[in-house]
Amino acid sequence: MPVGFSQLPILNLITSICVLVLWFKYFAVVVMGHNNSQTNDSSVKDDEKLITDNKNNTSNPDEKRWWYIALNDIENIPMALILYYGAYISVARNSQGILALMILLPIFTLSRIIHSFAFAKSMLYLRGGCHFISLACIISFGLTAIISNLI
Image (cartoon, rainbow, N blue to C red; front, side, top):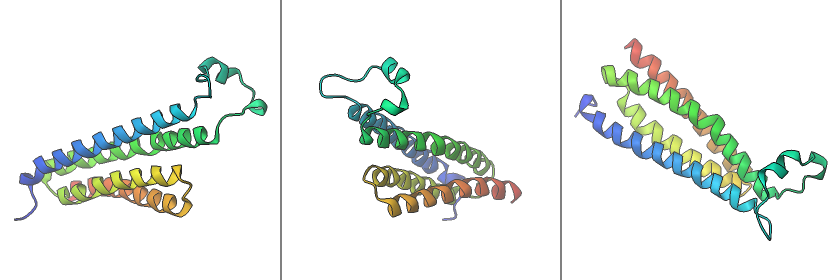
């Protein structure tokens, strides 16, 4: 059976699942960052963090790592989803590229999950590879939108 409009409900399901998984992953990263920011007796107050001089900053390296993971997610995931939804609108109009999006979004989601794990465990090469895969997916989202509009 050729890929066409009949696969649009499947693409909707894949989109919903992947976006929800990415949100839960981001939420888990933020929770892990918060859990690592707690000291032995209580958590550090936000106001104290703002007035702490960088020279006297004795924050936990694990805490910084989790916040860097969250910041990396904030830098990459929104742009990817904007390009994905642009491609989604394009393929919903003429059905060209539905299969590409059905494959690319789960790959992007999985690569972002593995990237966060590799970042947390200081696995440089795995982290770099997953980041490259996620960037390739982001570029592919944009190319899918362009190509589906030209066809």
